[in-house]
Amino acid sequence: MKKLSKNALIGYPAGIITGITYGLNPLFAVPLMKNGASIESILFFRYAIAVLLLGAFLFFKKETFKVSWKQAGVLFVLGLLYTSSSLFLFEAYHYIASGLATTLVFLYPVLVALIMVFLRVVPSWPVWLSIFLTFVGVVIMTQSDSSQTINPVGVLLSLGSALVYAFFIVIINRSKVIGNISNSLLTFYALSVGAIVFLGKIAMSDHGITTGLENHAAWLNLIGLALLPTIVSTATLAIATRNIGATKASVLGVFEPITAILVGTLFLGEPLTTNIVIGILISMAAVTFMIAATKR
Image 1 (cartoon, one colour):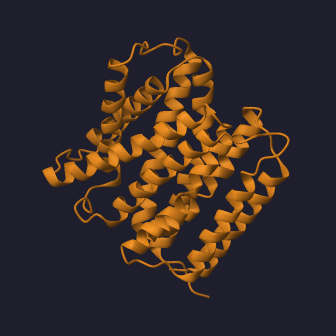
Image 2 (cartoon, rainbow, N blue to C red):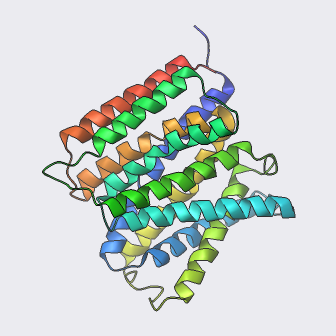
Image 3 (cartoon, rainbow, N blue to C red):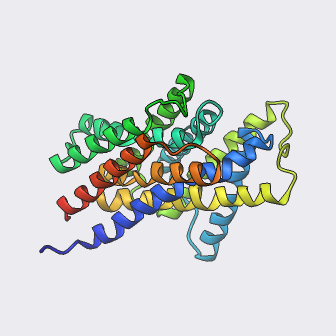
């Protein structure tokens, strides 16, 4: 039996961690939104806290913050993509259940695979099969029934989040310009762009920057958002894409909807239907097959 390579031993766990931590978005974000905080304020503080923590980490590691103008341009685009993905997802929470919205974002593996095909990188048949099965699983999970209805606006916002997230992944994987930039520094600059964008949006609005964020629980939720779905998720995504490729890293994100659905059910009172259970089982089987069939 062939042993897994070093890249696989690093990349697969990193991809799983990415999915789980990104799936925790609703756990921290929904209580803040219910308490009256604006999406712009939530995302600004989420990114700003993450930038401060990550900046301190890089400083104590004595890592240089210097990048070329070309690298800065790519990092700026990555920041805009990541920012847009978060914004679309949080807006979707206003229209459909948070677990469902985060689950719909998991359509991005299909989009990544299609983008990679346009770049003349065709996945192997086990990966294609895994993508198909995870797509089937997500479709089953998002079927309407007596316990929940699907608002098309929320669906479109979630799909928009998936699309820009797919481009984010592909650029990290394919851009040679940022190939020598560490995962931590890449994350730092992408999040810095997001913090600046949302600060600008707050400045142009009439919404108070700390409205709905007046208690300790709110700030604990913001710190949770900054650490897990932001720093950890983005850094491990970069690690996974560089070690096992964009498409496989995306498929491992199946842990994202599973986590989001469990969070919605256990902590936010959202329904756990038979469709959701069946969809999760199909998606888990697809990921297991992919890892077993592609021992690189």
